[in-house]
Length: 269
Image (cartoon, rainbow, N blue to C red; front, top):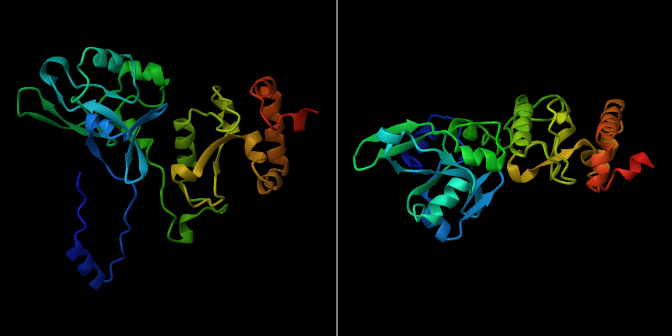
């Protein structure tokens, strides 16, 4: 998808005193999968297929662009090197057939025809769902919504809550924790119990609550979060935080010990 700058329109808006529209880092992209893979730009990860573009990794999926829709229905989209893909590779039916995308909708061309099925929402491949243990979405619309992480700082204080977070922070945090399967990046504990998933929190790596791109976010259990640095150790001294940490340790002490959590001994000795 080519994005036009509309320079003359921009100049006209400047003359009319319209505010400048800042460029977003997020782009809807479609690329030939095999071509990008041959360039070394494709990486399979646990939560999706990543395309390296202009030095930045973009999360997406792959799908068949030309398919026999009339006979078999719309193709599935894939987020992993699942059994279906492995089988297609073994049968030489993989290379040249797939495209990479990060959009909520795609256009599918009917095989041996010029008919285009426009703005199609694709269903997730069953084998991908099993391989990647996905339960939070089942189509490209759900996948796309998980990409909706804020990349920019707010432009005025009206967009912040009383704690200094952007107003959409709860939504951003929830989506990021879902994307990371409620697993602590530090000690690797994974919380399956939905009620206890509050023990997995989102940490800003550089300390700036306004920078919410993926590179600056990190999933941490409440124990690791409280001990990530001196500032956090001080911030977690209030009664509510201490109660939350103690409750977490009481429930998950054995698992934290088995995972060699580096902080657990400070609380049980």
